[in-house]
Length: 291
Image (cartoon, rainbow, N blue to C red; front, side):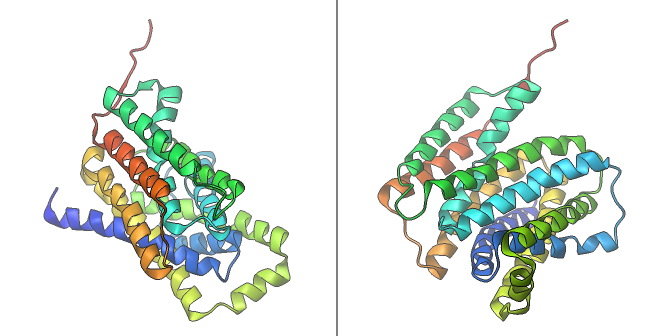
């Protein structure tokens, strides 16, 4: 990779890490459903200027509901209910573990020995984190958070159905799907009056956080990430995502004074180490078809 592309990859990872902090700030003023709806409403603005990619609506909706709506709604709900931002950033990156496992089940892509070792290490780390659940946030919040990497992983595999399309156009139209169902959910859960009141009473910090999440963390960062994946191999680009939880945890400790006990910190490091083993290993090979 060229130095400029390396800088872009690092910048995207930093943006995504800071996005967890911005989400926490926005959730101080908005409900999870409303915050997520606004995130994608802002990110979908480029749809006014780009054509819909040649992807069936069923595929587009399926990708959007998993890669975006499911992932970010579960993530924001868990953060709003007490899950620390730094921990959430680590758990979301465990999607690599689920992506490899689901690919093996759905496409018969048998993991390499290194990937199996990485899955085992990351699983141990998740179990260590589970041992800290119930002290500063509930088991239910942790369970909802685990929906995020699972949904993320399913969306990764569904993306295979949208090949040979412009990445910016695709992600813009993927962002167009979630706002309406999420707004309907906000009306149903919070009520129309409370929902509109939250919007009118948003502070400058809240609006700045939403613009960062929607325009920069979602729209621009995903577009840059897609360009990097287009121009370079997955093995060259994806490891930079390992920077996200470190940026998220560091920023959370500075902004919110977040601290980690020995067991949770060891679990977080173990999860990231396991993910590193998976991402840095050779790509899995599909089993040959039986005649």
